[in-house]
Length: 462
Image 1 (cartoon, one colour):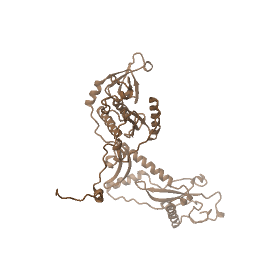
Image 2 (cartoon, one colour):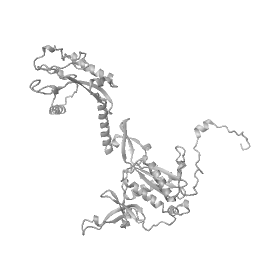
Image 3 (cartoon, helix red, strand yellow):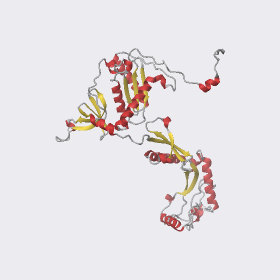
Image 4 (cartoon, one colour):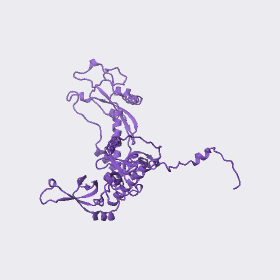
């Protein structure tokens, strides 16, 4: 076989390419900058958790030469352009040079092309998660932990800088490290005189260290007021944080449903599309009702869906006869109207009256069509119903009527019947009687104008 010589060819085997195709290597694609601010890496990311200040996104800027990092927090993605312009102006003021912008693009679905930014985001959120689970830090403080991580990273030796910190390369001097303390340590913050209640009141309040404003000033978390306090007059008890890290037990519920997006009928019952807290949209999964019906987000989803269904129903249901015939569902409404008119004709509900033979002081009442969409459990239209009613507000008490009543059974009667059925064992049968009100005996004469769609000329009195 070694001596066998096969002809070489440059032809491409289509079957091999379709069955064995691999991605091209990314080695050697990154080039190191030779001057500061020559090449900047921008990346916008979010854990999808609103912070204390309602920020949702982190904009990270990395200088490829200095390895110095800036981080900004935004409430919306649309604010990133303004923040970018603000940052460029800041750099121009620092260097006294006018900087142009050249936007470099990378291929889609190729995060390896921007490995510096992607690697930093990975390290950043690893640090945030580690701190949160070590001390039980609230999730809404992720922006503070991110800022602290960037603050410390700029002051640590960097391998790409020959073990020189990015802070020293940017500012030209060694950073001060004497003020650094253990994160989430007890911080006794001094209360200024205007915040002291009395002469015997405490002179400090115990908070938690969460970050640094600048060298010598600390950012502390006030859990009672749910706010960040900045002060330089702080005394720390680091042993409390170290003990807390050893005693802290992470929550059992590692995955928390942030929102329910949709629902459908699964093979074993209703299923709900869950958006998980801290995960991207591509990680959404369908879960059965037994896994989510105990949560608050499930109640919120049901209430929201019910409100939407009612709103849609109210917007689709016409308010007048003309609206029904001019709507997109005119054939369905016409069918419902014809069915109701046919029932009225079949039961001899009315007869035509000569206007000249009307009794004294008696006048006809106008009518109105009421349209209703009956929906199923999923909020989809099931039946289109039309109901004819009279405008009773046009009647006068003592002249047109003396009393009003409705032929309905009391709820107590229903309960007695169901109790007897449960006790004695007979079967219960429920049915719907169409036009049930026509079975009532009416001794008074009631006059109405012929309704629209009944086939009578306008103004006919029945």
